[in-house]
Image (tube, rainbow, N blue to C red; front, side, top):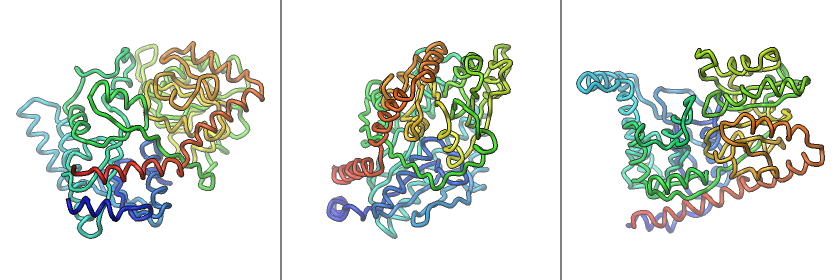
Length: 434
């Protein structure tokens, strides 16, 4: 109780020590998704408001990573000797139980990493008080925390739902308890154990309440658009001077790349001066012949004789991706389910019209036909109709939509989101241990 009293008395604006635990971090050397960008943005806005910030980047091997000066970055990793020991244990357990050794190994690694996190934080706390731990996603990273220091857990996704949604034929219900692995059950156990949970997404928060009996607080993620760091080398090499629609995100069923493929030919046929640009790391997808091909190859197959107007740029880092979004005619995001989509936020912030999926969390950002377009999930006809409608807008209609989108993204400014996070952290520290 004495420690809790100190938290109440000492923590004010500008003097909190925040430890951010994550397994993803956006840097100039690393292509990044929403979780990695969130981690970087959260660290920066708290540091800029005068707080001490430490990032614990939890990985399976040592990485030489540089981040902003002033923000302490520690790589908490599994040493090779321990990695080998865990692999040997997994093989023995697999031999006895018949379970898949790779699944056992991943579970053991997660449990070991969670213990590493707790030990590292406690060591830091002995030297300089740690006021708040923010665990940026599940992956069992908070499982080893003993509760001596206040912590919150952020829902970056429900991986078991994402795994189901990433199948060619996922069905209507992504929350499928019959398909839960032991690791999924560990995640759910962790959520039920965690008293303070943050969800950027109304959709994910509601699923948590309805399906698991947890009660996440919805706080949207901060967004920072810094044009000073941009690198337009890929844009100049592959896209400059071209009129194009962009699909940026991992090439997969989860992100709706199959929908992009199915409408590619019609879009390129209807608009002879248009290109289709794909930006994101690819996964294998199944074509009409039952063959497994890379996602960008699937789009080219469907584009048929217009395949030469499909441009794949790989998975560029954020600084190289932004100029590609900024110069696009339109952004198409047909994901099956999202958290609070960073890809959508980026596009809206840059004044791009977005065509996205209704019921996948995009509706939290987009008011249909007002600040963008919302379409039916897994329905290529719905997306094609919206794309054509978006491309046919006159300049006045387009600018009106862009202005509405900009107003929505202003609500995610660092100043506004910082206050919400800081107030929530204060509440957690005041209530911790009761």
